[in-house]
Image (cartoon, rainbow, N blue to C red; front, side, top):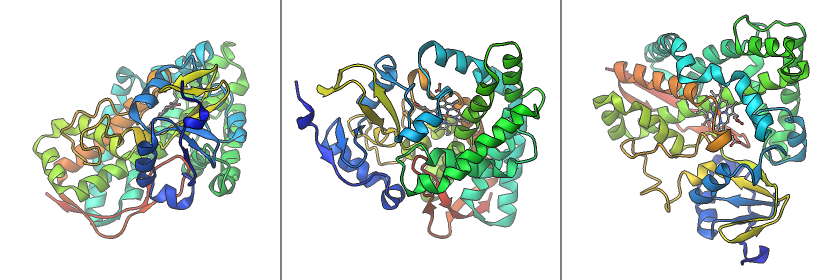
Length: 394
Ligand code: HEM
């Protein structure tokens, strides 16, 4: 059996500002090195290929989340009590408390409002002609998610900054994480106050949690954590997918024509966008026992880094992985995770991204890039910070 010394090492920092802004060349080199690569800087086993990422996500008995899915011990402690950081029955119990709000059936009641808002967002963008697609991508998630989670109006202006900071904190404890730590703590204080003052919106997810605490199904302290649990992953991720979709259709006019010819391709186009520019770069798991990955020994207690963004461009799994093609079957992409911890909010994310695409397809002839886009500096979220565009009406 191969031993640790057989595992290739990679020295560059995957979380440096340069690597965050230009991440795919690192993934290419990691995949070429093998199925398991030791990241010298972060002391973690990286999994750059599709097969091993999927296998680890599906084997949640061996590769656990309860010790945190971040890359630094502070975040792995602070996030205790969340759905994301739990295993087995604890995980099932926490997920069941609110996941029913996000089932396709539950989301049906939101569909009309989401489509209407998407039409407004697109019409405003057409009217302005020159827009920042990164900013435009925020409008829909910010109008849907805070009401669903139940945050009071007061304080909402900080939610996006707090959620972005929470993601930054899940990478290594580097400059980005330190810079945004006060914002992460701000969200925790806000959530505790909202729970203490019971100021959540009536009938929202947060309200369900308060009721569950009243009935003794969870501790009051868990309410705030679980509210954050659903807020943090629900904004930046979808904003990333919407902005990437805008960029990809602006830079691939032939794909835009295909989508306009057949809007029935929208659900698969969303999968292809999430495959091509996976909004979440990577999360970790901890080996609960001595095990192996692709024949390499992984000792108990080791951390493995599941690189969703790299798995989704693996040539061993995808034909022409660097080609954006909405006709390929992209349904098995790993951008929403897989298995027990597979994204609880993907129905909502798909609904929002599809609604924007549908509104665009109906109203826009072409999307044009009018300047150089810039990637945001975030350890976990792969999204545009600036995306100058113009929309040419149909
Ligand atoms: C394009 C948008 C989105 C992407 C790419 C995305 C991606 C992911 C990924 C990769 C995971 C798995 C984490 C793991 O393996 O440990 C995850 C989990 C999760 N996501 Fe999403 N997400 C998106 C939108 C949302 C939205 C809109 C919500 C909430 C309304 C949400 C709520 C959650 C929650 C609660 C979990 C934890 C599930 C669990 O641990 O059981 N996500 N997401």
